Length: 184
Image (tube, rainbow, N blue to C red; front, side, top):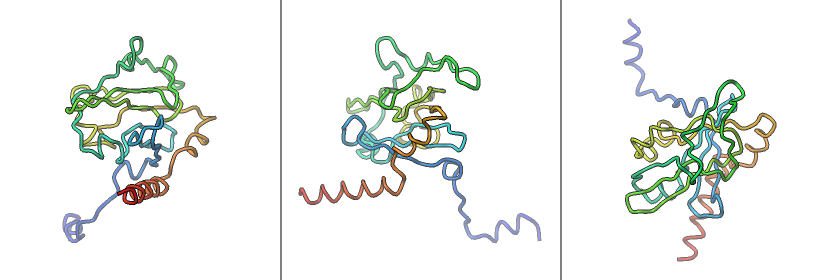
């Protein structure tokens, strides 16, 4: 019996994705007090974090179609100009928890600011979103990540503790759904 025969005998084995194997998911809901302004932070064991949209973000929840992504977040600051070099990411732009990473414009004219949700140094932004903004919705946790952020070692644990676990995130989603039903 060959190795190929052995594999064919396994009935559709499913394996965890790279994201599921190597990243812990953390969530931040209602950034800046805005309903639907929810983000997911994918945290690697080396403390590198990927900023993505949470499933409950208005863009995903309302099935909006991203038309453009701009990293020009204000008149003076373009996240594409970020120059992080070396182990300490010297020269990197420093982000606050409510630091805007990019601005997304959808086909219906709605505009959303994407926030970092954690303090740290901007390692890189996903410039592929400029040419293909649909990655935000089609491949949210892989090719559609927004930015890579490196929190300081001293702040990492406290910042992660301030974010929601997947279980707590789900509880808040269910609680919000219950409130909406009661209001109807």
